[in-house]
Image (cartoon, rainbow, N blue to C red; front, side, top):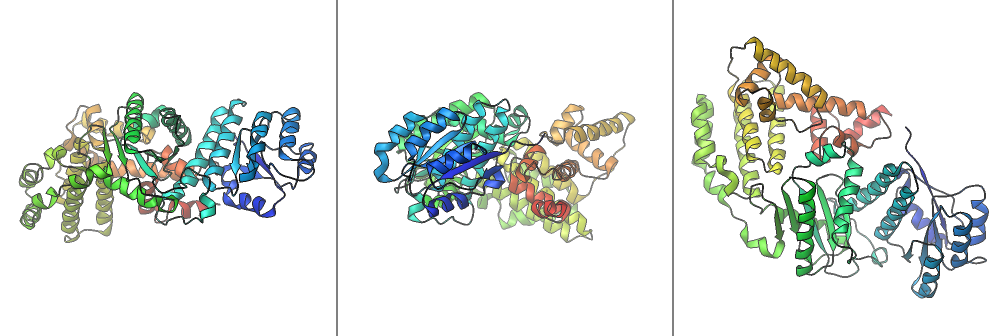
Length: 528
């Protein structure tokens, strides 16, 4: 079914205001047709006789027919049109009249991008209430918010002039980012039928409901679907209350560990990227366990420990390399899990665990590249290394150790095992199950439990029977499905990633490029 398109009309006698709103957002990307603008109220009424918009944005002060009278006439004759009004600082006497007449909100001139995004998103939500296909319009509103606001925290800062930020919640110094991370999004992904935008809209709605008093900006980071960002100007005590409410609400929605990490209150619009980076740094201090936590920057600065260097000494690295060279699996396991402490990494923090996993992976990779193996073997270990790095985010120690064990077996070589007919059937069943349920959270231990087989044994048998590592097979199947979905122009690439089971677009993009040799965007451009 073709997705619904929306029509937006701007009415203002100032050319630069009309042009600024036309170019501020890439309307076409959100299936919004920007109609030829009108210069006054009378022109609007003439246009509406033959061509009606879904959303009308009109200035209050215009010649011939001013905004107040225009709003009254439009609401009488075309009540389904959602109206927003533009006003200057001196127009507040008229704003109340337009709201009474039927406008839903006003935008203060000069219009800021954030205010425009929020106003149009709200208009789309109101339109959804009048339509049978409510979800589609809500998703459009959600996507507009998430994609445009995510640009503010991208690596390259979005530098805005002072006029562009006027009128927003971020006018003054003192705003903060509250990062809300749902470490395991799989339960919610399944509940919302792998519909990224509907899940995003629903979670944001629940977050907004936790605080209706303050003017918060809430959006879902488009590249990491499990990260929700709350931009605010609250003081520390108010943030604490809000964080507790959010934690309680999300615990009702999912059994995933939650981290709420709050940056310092010293940022403005053009430094939101820095605030986001700081909130990520705060999150890195969380204990590596499945407890949900709330962390504040000013409290956590001194809590970061550096035990990783204590347990991963040059001597330990040498012993690991020796165990690999001699093929001594038992010694290697003793070193990793007991002497180094990987088996009890719940005592570490997030950053320490991530660093240790990266160092172990580097030792594995160095060992493999020193052997007479094909470039493809090295590439496959690279993929497993990236999986392990990503697996750290789940806070699941068992799954992390399982993946590291697979990397170890890959490096040291798989031992041949006798395969009974039943086990061979289990592998065939597992392949069929993966082919049908590739988008679910599929792990070695989960599949091994499903067929009541010890996980390391099942891993060896899967590789022996199929010629492929289990986790790499799952990733390959997801990539095949992603390539199929990319042929559909009605689905954007971030949605494709979500539909095949990835809550992190950046990670999906890396895996896709390793699998195909090109980025998802390059691949799609070749299809068009």
